Image (cartoon, rainbow, N blue to C red):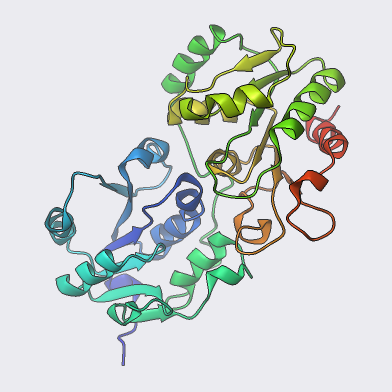
Length: 337
């Protein structure tokens, strides 16, 4: 019989989520809950090294550990052994990590019940995420809730990401060179998704941009994306451009993108990492999602309470059915104009 997890006896907790931006952000409610439940413990969040900048400055005492491509199995094992982890929670199941913590003799190892290597976990949650019956953050929280419980006072804050005033000042000065002055009203459109979900077309994005400029002339449209997404962004922008259309593709790091999003009036995109940055900042959001599990909004909508989701009205995944006029009308409700 597996030993019961008693929070006051736990001295060191590790939560592992080593994939992408959205996945990591939707694991933050679990991290915040663990910090609240295990009050006497060190809490570690293990993520891909490229995402560490996004998590700097969190408002709770959590240690960020990073995985980089130069580490081998032995390197990672030494890293975890040094911290003497009592409880490891695997929000993203991986065989190598499951085996590693089994070999380390970690007392409590929590993971899914449905991988071939799930016998390496000694506390297993019987949920199939592929059916998308719940939100991803709820699946993650259940890894803790199932065996410990979460006190009702352990509430997740509305804002999960933070930055310093100095960072804000530096970025806002830099933004002037982009055409974004203090007090500039702007809407962000992020057309890329790196293939993480079914998308609306670039032509639909172009229509949305044109109609937004006509309907809300007090706002600029700021386009964001990776340098590798330059062609996608260019082909989603209005053909005729002026000073109200700003292309920041490839010009921002993660911290700068976070600050840009935080000062926007509205964020518009497909289901992709940056939409979850907006959700973690509780911003106004319009998101485009297919109906099919496991990539639908039931599982992957952003956190936050100011989100409007558009999906094909006939229950299909035909994203061309999303009406750009309805999107622009919805933008007005978010902008309160």
